[in-house]
Image 1 (spheres, rainbow, N blue to C red):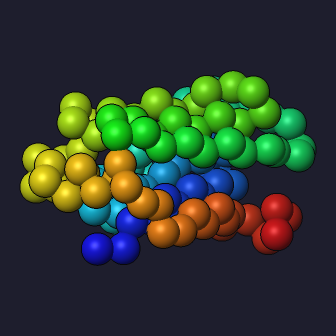
Image 2: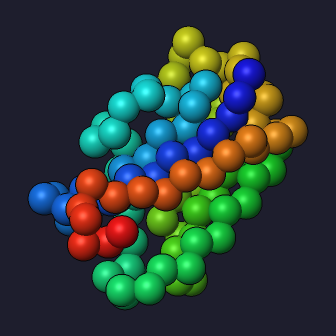
Image 3: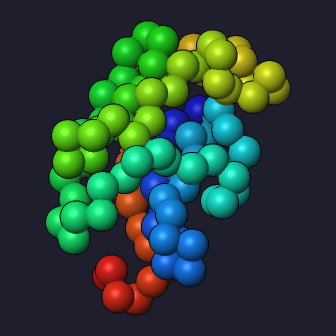
Length: 99
């Protein structure tokens, strides 16, 4: 399985959403990041452990995802794969102003 993290900024709502392949629904505007700083320049730090994926933006924790508790039931077995590898990270925007 390919494991990927997708983060998307939605200009109209001024919100950030995310998708964890093989763990959450594969659609944006379903799962949202909390407390993303409004700074124009963003520095992202993404770490994975056997049990969690943690996303920090400009020093603020915006996601602390527990694979066992937060993955959809259909993906519980696949969630264990996240402890071993993250194949890709994509951060994008639906706003041409941010590209």
